[in-house]
Image (cartoon, rainbow over all chains, first blue to last red; front, side, top):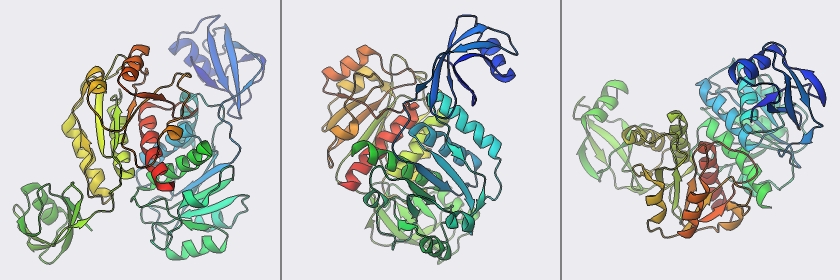
Length: 235
Length: 235
């Protein structure tokens, strides 16, 4: 079933925006009476029906919202340095959305390969992944910021910095406890500098390892994301 | 440090094949005395040194092999139906190699989107990922085969079929025990047919769920792979 994203969806009769109307009516050839589903990206899913298949301002009726399946009793935030190859970052965003993530921070640091990103394009990847995986919540994507700003901001939960250095021998999966909020920093291809790790530690971040495997940036970020979801699943 | 793949590597003086010689000497501009590392894809890593930087038949000296870090006391096998978009399958192969996998089966089934794959190309993805993640073992990739043949072959270990159907409510992560060999079947975009699930079950496969999230084929396969590695890591 088609799922549409309408941030301001509510029960009752509403008119779809032009692009979504066009997609439903011209591309999917939906007619009056056809069913669709709407997510507001905030945790609600609505069952809907086409009333008027207008190609620019289609009218639909939405039932009372139901809570989506993608709610969990913790907040999972990952901070990642954008990869040199933008596809790899987009891939992480898609997969993390499928698996389940609340919030993504982007930062640039000493060894960063990329200091500019097109947030609008990344936002589209998140929306597509949310719809494709039938989720009701859109992960919150923050604008790119300097590492030094990110690590000094207030955060309520466990704070981790994943580091390749062998001295970081505490495993994330041995330190994290189910139901805790957590923010995990994943370094760029060239890893964090020793100074950055020190700065993070002095701001309450615990240096952890994701295991023995040598992972690419985007793989490390996904492994961290799935580890937290899995530890909560098996508790 | 550059890492080369030489399936028949052994300690002593050896000549590199033409393509690898060209890469080391012409592309990386390695000279006599430069260090490199060699993996045989079978679990051994060799420290090496260039003796003669000949662009077509470079000669290197290899020390006695050391065991790579990528050894674990279980065998992890995943069977996946190739995705319509070949990039998604290649992505899975790359990421599973980074995270750690022993063996990959490819199959076509009732709802398969793709019944042909270029194994040679997939093999290159595996080799590149092995080298990039400094692994000593190359995952074994089997040729595409029919689902019915795959599920009837002998396998020593836990056998699972991951299925979206809500009746498959045993979680893989609750059923699997650390150190067990396992083979996990991941269905195509259109999922397994009820008959296929029945056939697998009658051949000793347990129907399991990977959790509530609705995952793409390649994401499900990676989640299964990482789940097994993580359950062994935290035991």
